[in-house]
Amino acid sequence: MEKTCTKCGETKPLSAYRKQRDTKDGYSYHCKACRRIYWQTYYAANGDRLRAEVVARREANPEQRAAAQRAWREANPERDADRKKTWREANPERDAATTKAWAEANPERRAASNKAWREAHPEHSRVKWLRSAYGISQADYAEMLEAQEHGCAICGKTKAEEGMRLSVDHDHDTGKVRGLLCGSCNRAIGLLRHDPELLRSATVYLDQWMQG
Image (tube, rainbow, N blue to C red; front, side, top):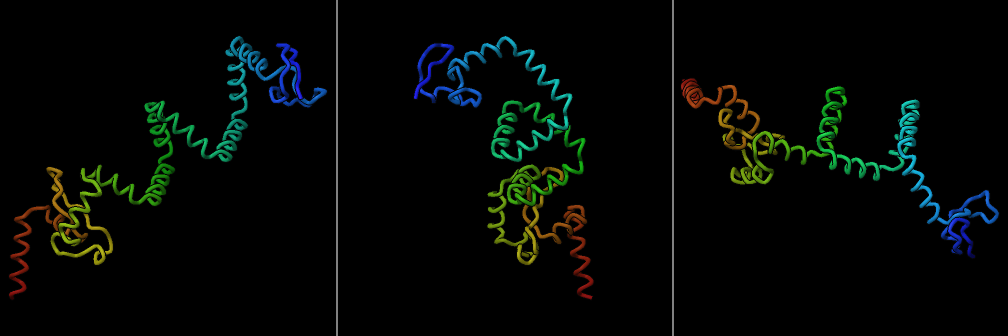
């Protein structure tokens, strides 16, 4: 079936018209192309007024707007994620400022959110921590572990024996990574202030007492 547009006068198939209940045949009087031109012209001439009206409605009904936005996000999680990602990439400075402001205003929620993310992404969190704290990658850590035959550089205790990953030991003055230690050895040299003389004195002291 075809229909003649009352705007442009052209006869077109019904697919070129919008469905409209209040017309005799159930389709709009104007074709989609003519309607598009009409609304483009209308918005160009009345854009400022229409935008002002939208802003006024939002300000007058903040709870209603928030509920509508929340419902849309819940119904369209993937589109919402894509939209947020696009906005962040286009507005990095505003995104950073917004994130910082929210974190400062919601310290408890931020801590809970960070904790939940770390628990959900343990390896990613560890990779980031190794890089920021010691300047090494996960591959660097694995290489050091292999070189130490998977044991503590001092006592030889392995991850299985320690019950947790070996700690990264580093020079607190220079930041240089020295090796991987079990928790006990790492704490021990820390308590002796990483001082070789104190460590040697402790060895001599223990030898004397063990020899009677």
